[in-house]
Amino acid sequence: MNWEQLLSLKRFGDVNKRLRQEQDETRLGFEVDYDRIIFSSEFRSLQDKTQVVPLSKTDFVHTRLTHSLEVSVVGRSLGRQVGRLLLEKHPHLQKIHGYQINDFGAIVAAAALAHDIGNPPFGHSGEKAIGAYFKEGEGKQFESHLTKKQYKDLCDFEGNANGFKILTESRVGREGGLRLSYATLGAFMKYPKASLPKKPTTHIADKKYGFFQSEEETFKAIAEELGLEARDKANNAFARHPLAYLVEAADDICYTIIDFEDGINLGLIEEDYALEYLIKLVKNTINTEKYNALKTTEDRVSYLRALAIGTLIDEAVSIFMKNEEQILAGTFETGLLDVSSYKAQISDIIDISIKKVYQSAEVVNKEIAGYKVLEGILSVFGRAASNFYSGHLTSYDKLILKTLPETVNLSTNSLYDNLIAVCLYVSKLSDSNAMLLYHRFNGNLI
Image 1 (tube, rainbow, N blue to C red):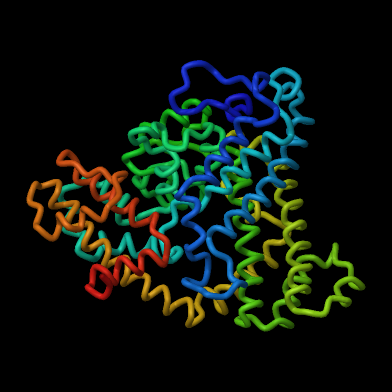
Image 2 (image 1 turned 60 degrees about the horizontal axis):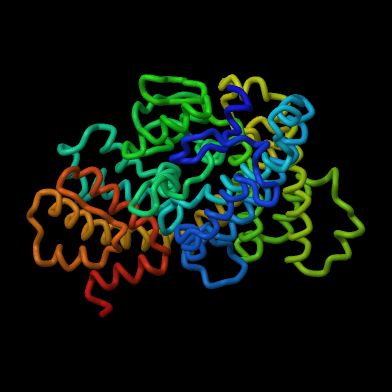
């Protein structure tokens, strides 16, 4: 892979090539990507979607929106630092093509801003709930009517693939979705492969999948434009865009440190115990006098969090540049922080978060409720989508379909398209709206 292609400014529908030298410096194409994402309705709904604690009413806890904004800020720093070093290493990118340090920061920031845009309500349990409906619930009846890849898309419903659909799906008046630059879309795709074949490998790009069958042609066009290295061309599996490693690192840094911070502020993790682990991570940069002068838990945690994020940003940049050739060749098989010298400290913090926060009674009980809510909603919409396809709508189905926005287009041509459209609609619901819809379907609200 080469940076000239990887930094493509092309957008859906472009006929002529977009050149970096011709960009308006007051509003670069990569910065336009950020603006389009942040003004989208799908991004706004993240303000009422779970990050760790579902339906939390405390100001301490992060939502998907605040998490995404923070990941974006960290991503911008990662991109700018890497950009500076890359332009020193490959000066022709700047001298001949006109790329600047901030271009790298803008691409990573935009992709990081969108990294959770496809996540359904109730966090990762929402993904599992949608998959369970098709794998074990009423949706299993559709298996015989779908291809293996189509059915796998539904059974292993994936927020990353759903996010790619949101960003790229065409509809009347919105051809090409948000029409982001291909560089940003490439950086967004952490898992550039289909749901099948599902081969057990150690390569980080095989951990999940990145596009539904409905977006296969769009994905191939973007991968070709960017010159992504083919890992299994027959099955449309490619190596990651290099900047996807930075997007992933930004996410890893934030959920490691900030979810831990949420746990402390919620009282789920004891302060003394927690601060001990954070101090291990920042022992080389902490100003002991300043730290000891801080009077509140919140201030002490905030100070250590800032230092920890800075430490891990520098570490991720160093690892990226050390392995740039492998990354460009598509042979770098792990996440950046997986080979970090701070791996032990990161693992300790994540282990505590899992035990004290992710598996706390508050989180588990609300995830159980979320499972039931999504199962109930999908049961109603799935049946209506199937009956629309077969031409056997009931009177109740007709009422249900009136609740769907005009952007949800069902047809009699493809059961898969109908089911994936319903899943997309459900995934866009906020936690609160999903609850309201569930109660309405059960006759508890009018």
